Length: 465
Image (cartoon, rainbow, N blue to C red):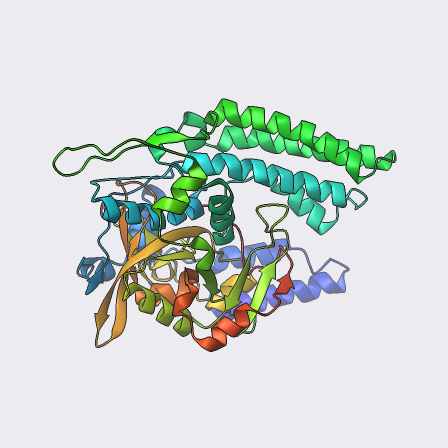
């Protein structure tokens, strides 16, 4: 049966079915037969079936032409020692933030390696998120459980994911400390089970607060109850992470093996005295074509602390955020960025390149979507954060970017990735850098009151891959 005959059969079956009262929305037996008849098992399709049945789709569709020309030559590369591993957690945003700071310590003290404790910050991040969650249900105790914001909070009580602003507020409030003073535990490196317990606690506590409010309890006694709930959260966190140090003794050893004098630090003092970088001066510049550029936006329910504002960003064009990233790199400033690692990424080879997989050729279908369309239909999201540490320029134009990831050394080039410039265009959604690099017009936008967007807007989601 040729395609025209198959189409006629489908149409005829639909007309007959309609005439005799059959529901045209359902698939009739004639339509199913037409679909079956439309499939042709030719030699090419048979080969595809055999290949797909026994192999990884990505390896079959891997564009060897792109892989073959990958190289590690970059005209500008900021020296970077070592690599970090977030393991089985969604703490990429935190690891990327700490990677900005740790290299400063390595350069300052000529260390072979150095890493800040992500567990320390993750502990306080969980506690602060629990407080935000409970405060929401104190302030919104009378809202319907099927309310969209209430449903969102119940679905994501205390996840691992976060935004750049979370890094700023955590470091400013709690400081930082070397990893040796609060290392990883099984639970901190594999958070799924711990998160299950914490999320269940939060959902139960939300219902308790709602019942107390329904019985006439006002905000003051509800907050007293909240503190009892947070005591339980703190207990669970200590059991999983260990108790965070309030002070520690720090020493370094120079290249001649001579140890420095021991100095006692609090985490807050360590951050203020050891690091020149002021994270509060870093700002988020986004490329979200769903919304007009040249404006500042915020996302509702994305605050990491109950007394801090929601996460916000200035929306610009791809060309603008790329130009600012390049400007910072040329000044030896590393650039935190958020992207979608769900498309055209080969983690083993450490390659992020547009067109890396030719699924369309393999299946004979069209999968093309623009950046805007991918956001509109939830086919893309800002789900991972890393650090740009280099770029390859030819005639002044970026060809590819050198990226520090936090997936350990087994993936990529000892943990580092190559991102092609056209992949940047399609899948990078925001960059974070000091505002000293910004032009006056962008600085002016930063002072504007942000336009609030609902938390379900496709423009953003927690980075936590």
